[in-house]
Length: 190
Image (cartoon, rainbow, N blue to C red; front, side, top):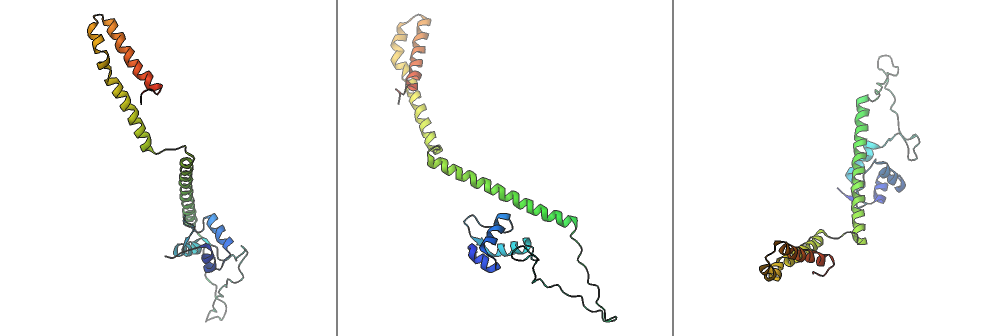
């Protein structure tokens, strides 16, 4: 497994780098996320996904040699060469399935890459903060509220002890608890 750039792959396949880029874009060969190519994988994909009867410019390849049928030794006439049957529907369906599976996997990979890039951008733009910072801030805020609520009994215990009216005791407690939350909302409790 050798990792090489697009120029080396183009020389290995005797093609223009633009043709290699087109092959990557069309999904015929795979380029790694870092921009390099695995030579073994690319060679196998090129052989499997390229129509070699077409030349370098997509025209019929004049260099493809058709084998002549051998002479029949008895009649000294050209024997009929066995004709390759057309691909069966199952073979075509299997090729199409592989191509669509590859396209789906590639699309999913690109979606995840795009999401990661968006998250990195949002983080650098300051729209995202680490979850740990949020947890620490929430813990600090709730601790301040707890401390303020726990200090209520020491502030109002003497007033409550001197009261005999239940309605007045309720009002004192409600006033103190409301004051704690109002002070917190206004930023007076830190």
